[in-house]
Structure formats: structure tokens, C-alpha cells
Image (cartoon, rainbow, N blue to C red):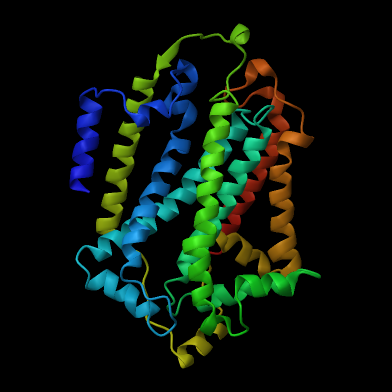
Length: 359
């Protein structure tokens, strides 16, 4: 990590000859839409966090034992006995949490700058799907700790699948396998985490990045409607991206050093039974809003139907709401998509309130 940061800092301070990394970027980009206050550096940061998750995840695989008897103990071994293992695990954990936050910020930026209109509607759906799969990856990674804190969220989350009419039992078997979820589901979730969801994230991520280039790069008004027609070269864009990577790396390193990832005792039969009955166990922070709604009544309505309606509404924004005015695309809070902004703001505010209520 030290040499990585040293390389980044030298790249920022001293120009380097063009490389393959440079040629992944367009030759130029509009100056106004290249500023940090416009992009919030969210898209590039999300890709960087995915790379960190991939590298640290591979390193953890050398010591992780994906079976119920040894999984929690192997996590403890990684944390306390493997040289730099605790740091790598903390880095993996905090990168995963940051990815959810950064992806949400990126989604909000797309909505609040009207960057989802034609021809970017399909790529908007790809980005939303990538966000959902990233949350599922975070949840399956949370389960792989296999300690006393995960049995209740695992049981509750997988039982929600059974409430879905007609296909619920089928989806439950695909996700879990057996009926004793806190005893037999570990290998299934490990496979989903390492292969199924990871491969899907890679495919969606590459497809999403390809469509960004194919759809004309960052969303901007047509040339004749732009107030600022200046552009920056790819070298400057890469320099800004590397500087962002440097800042994110420093933040993750500090978090990983001073704030350890959660860890608890391994599950036993007696502990598992008591944890399953406990009302004090919390879901992962990104599902706390769903857990709060489950207290209100029917699990299918509040745990499956309402989240599905919210997701469907977000997915249909480019198709059912008025298209943004071309002259306002790429500017913050344009009037032409005010309805979409209000709806997304209301949904986001409700989710945040429910999350903090259930903290």
C-alpha cells in the first residue's frame, strides 16, 4: 500500500507518458462537467473501490474457510494472526461500505443533473442494476463472517423470499439450498459472493462503462446550447482521477487502522437458538430501513412489495417522467425534471429517517 500511494503521488506531481489507462478515457471532455463539484468523482471512485474489493477479497480467500465449523474462526485468524490480515480485512470492509454510499451519491447525481435522458436511458438501468447487485454483494459478504450477529439477519432476509407468491419457495432454494439456513447456507452464500454476484458485477460494470463511451460520454447539452464550450484533455482528466484515488486511499487506510471491522464470537447451537429469538439484533446498516418497516406488519408487504415498488419506480424514471430539456442536461437541479427530483428526494429522505430510527 505504501508503494501504491508513492506511485500515485508521483503520478499527480509529475506528468507521465500516455498509457493504456489514458486511452480508456475520451480525448477531451467538457470543462464544466469535468469539475469535481459536478461529478462528485462518484463514478470513478466506485470503480476504484471495486478494484480494492477485488484485490483484498482475493487475499482473504487464502485463509478463509467456507464451512460452518471453521468460517468464524478463520475470520478471527485473518484478523488477529495473519500478518497485516486485520488491516486487509478492515480495508475490504470499509471499501464495501464506501461503495454503497458512493454508488448512492452517483445515482443521485445522475437524477439531479438530468443525466438519464435519451440515449442514456438503458445505461441508467444498467447503473441501477449495478447498485442493487453491489448491495447484494455487501450482504453476502456480511453473512460470510458467520458469527453470532448474522443468524437473525440471514434468517429474516431469506424468509422474505418465501413470502413471494408462486415463486417464493423456488427463489429460497436457489438462494439458500436447505431449510436450516443458519447451519447449511454458508457455502451457498460463499459461492454467490465469490462467483455469481462478482461475475455479474464485472459484466454490468464493463457494460456500464462501455455504454458511457458509446452514449457520448458525460451528459451535456448539444454544442449549440452550451454556455461554455471549452474542453480539457484526457491527461488532465486522468490527473484528477488519480488525485481522487489518492485521497480515497488515504481515507480508507486511516479508517482501516483506527476503526476495525465488526467481529463477534463464532456461532454454536445454543447461541444460534438464542440469537434467532433475540429482538435486539440489527440488520446490516443498508437494510435497517427495511427492518424498521417489518415491525409494522405483513412481511411480504413491508419487506418485499414496498421495496420492489420503490425500485420499479426508480427504474422507470427515464420512461414515465417528462424528458429533461436539452439545454439543462448536465446542470444541477434543472427545472425540466423537477418532478423526478422531488420523488427521489422524498424516497431518499424516508429511507434515511427509517434507517436512523432503527439504529
